[in-house]
Image 1: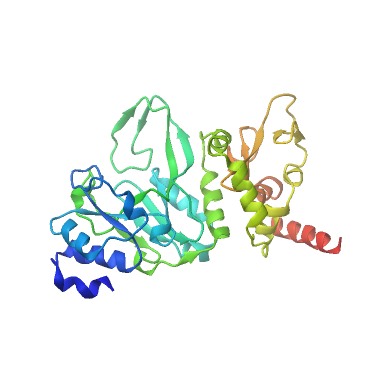
Image 2: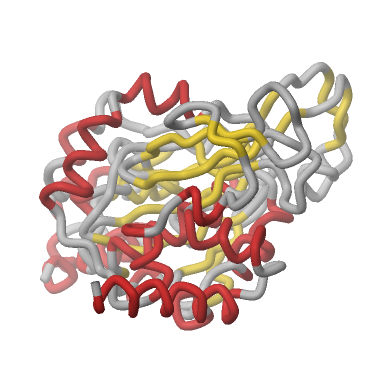
Length: 339
């Protein structure tokens, strides 16, 4: 263990804290204390593939520095949900099973929240939900503590991830790492030192719930840009998918025609809502191996956004009652088994 060697080098509190993070399996880098949160070393790419040595930690943290915790596979599959609109944290977590929420590490940042987990499935940084703003919007409206006016912001990030190639500021870093001089601190759930892994299926639930708050991101364009046809083949062709629960089974085998009863299928991936005679109201798209339906219309009983099959089924056909939706899916599962 790296902490067994601390007597050989400087023993500043930040050095000892950095050792604890590395002992817990996280790769770390030093951060500047000028409010930029930028790395204090010329290059940190190599630490995406290896952990720093005790001598490197001693050199970095013999003076005050912030601690950057790298996300991605090098840190045991660490991934962070970053809420740039702080007010969305509670609504997002309310959509998830309580036993899953209890296993997520929730940290308060100076201007929002980080919700973190470890998973065997992890990818690069992604924008999950965007927002569209008027010409002038208050930071208070975005969930920030002050009321600074931001002028002429066309779009902004609501919820994004930090994965491969990213990092988060570690709790315990000096206040000057952030321009507000407010702390990063643990709020609820396990700390990073206690954090276990969630399943890829649970990660998918977290992502789908976050995407439901999207007001402006073009998932279809993002999908084309990242070539997600390959991701779809990997997800549905070679990976094992848990279908033991009604919602997982329905996300895998359910039909969008069953979800969008009464809607007109304009093409293979386009739908028009009931009562509309022209145009497109919804579109199907693959996002990182997850098939989603993006609702454009404001004349249906769900907010515009992207939904998985089961979530949209519950909202459109069962007025948000997931239990009734599960009963419906179990009937379909039974019929499939008989057939």
